Length: 575
Image (cartoon, rainbow, N blue to C red; front, side, top):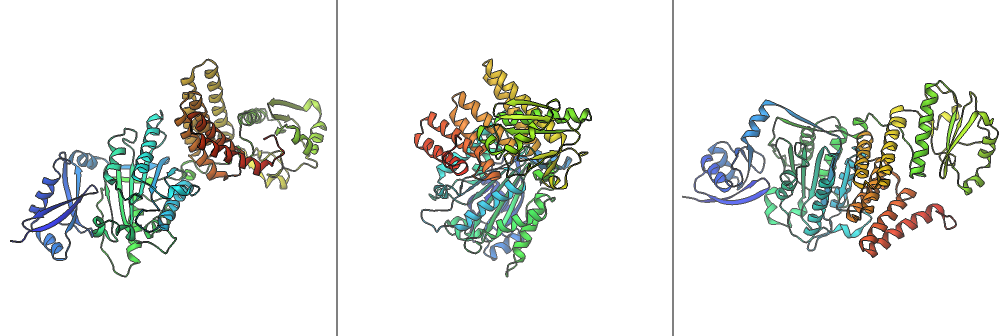
């Protein structure tokens, strides 16, 4: 009698055992015996070979062994969940996902994988730019040392973001996307199921929220570990009630380009933005295998009771109109002066009054360079003009039916203003209309007033030494900005910065640095490096690092802040 040594993968873990007979009952019994401790409340749903073919009868098993298929995949599902799933179809819309990307480019004993770098950057661009999700990546193009990722680095990366979730009193994220690209640089392996269990079983944050896990292996990477030799050019995914796991074993593309799977996946998802993730994966699979000379059969294990739709911010927020600009000015006095201007706009609209409102910077060097505006202000009748000061900023309210801007330029290159908002019934010159923004009461008045009110309450709490209350107001501030604008927006940066400042005052430097880091990532995405607000965030981080005793890191961030200011203002400037 022949004895066959076979392998089975269960929840991304691989087991080896012996079959004394080629019957489906023998195969099922061996699998149940091996996994009885882990799946006591679960039932064995299906068994497939590595091509995705179901093994349901004796002849299926015998044919697989005859074709040298000695590796199988067993799929378990909770009986309770299965019964519940039959009662209701679950459909999730993910609007504010937390996206974590992990991957190593440099390895101790392997080639340098440029495709992994491209994979990580392409996926980050997809979720960050196209969807507006918050993305954290182990690889930072500005920091070459992050091309290596040790097992300790990966553990620290996961722990850091888990700790941040526990510290956040509000459930801002409505889903998780975790992408892992093979092994760590020191060739130490973290079982993917262990990664999943951290978010699925050890944390309560994502309970009841969709969790999407993707593991990507390229063919060259596969050769670094013999355990993957039976996974060539296959991809499959496993779905549970609120968990979707995608395993993609793909080939490396041309040198320097992303892998076939990542490149195709990103193309498909952008072309089918309104489709669910199951459709996206199916289309990606079809396109990959249709392009190959050898046609390969693939059958996916799926639950028909679970749908995930990834909703871009532009759709979930109905294409957010332009809001207050923060590239040139961003501090609290800028925000206060513009909220005051917004209040005046609404008051004038309600009273059916005509006029113009300016918010200007009143620094001495500004006055010297803008005599035309000073002359314009003095030419207006004093009875029709009112003004309020917020430190370096003045709000001018001019109530006139006809206002002529003589020799005054309004565009992004002049310090008078970086934006011009007009109400829908305003009659203005066609040249000015080209650079104007139509007033939106909700985004230009309602939300800024709410945020300013929370900032005022935060200040009142600090004066009364109610520091925890101040943080509560700021977390509410963050909740409003994320829900209104998505994660990739300057107002969210303001929220993160304010929270970071409070944690620094509480001498909780790690938390402060974490919020500054989040703010920096978003602002660099929006404005790039050449922005005063970016400089200030580097400065805030430097102070926190210095207070923590990490002086080299503090010096590094002080230098980054200084270099930005020198590039923007030059050497002969107080800023």
